[in-house]
Image (cartoon, rainbow, N blue to C red):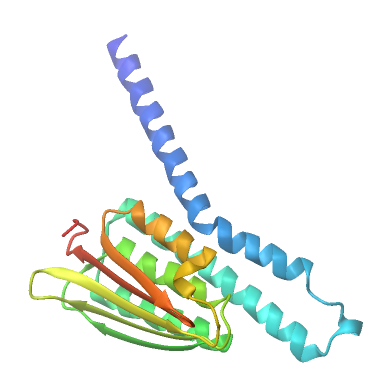
Length: 208
């Protein structure tokens, strides 16, 4: 009887963990999936728009799908292993920059790390970059490095041609809401046409 109860308890715990993981993935991707649906629903018919217009919108959908795939992979990585080694970090940074340039978003990235990085910090880069998809003439720059106090720091800057304070937009509020649920120290600020993020975590994913 006790053995049966133990097996049932283990199965229940495993199921609950899987459900939490599904919820996290859904929460992480819900906004981008909704944006894909919006783009496809408003895509002009072939006879109503030049091929270049449709091609640009479909390229945005392709990039958002890549974002969903890689963001989901990072969410799963956080559950399986909270740290990413330096080689994978550089690969993720290179893939992100390539995806952004494919849709006309200039991106410059500097990765200066000697130790593994918490998966959640790389995940945040995708969340910050997602703001650029809805901006006019965006340029994204970010730096990943280590500080003397033992923390890993992400500094990111988005410059755009938008005339509004990007820190006051729904996109920035969603970003701050997401970060507030993570065990990190962060600052999100901005002004007309720009948005800045500074985020720090200790190596191994602990809050500084």
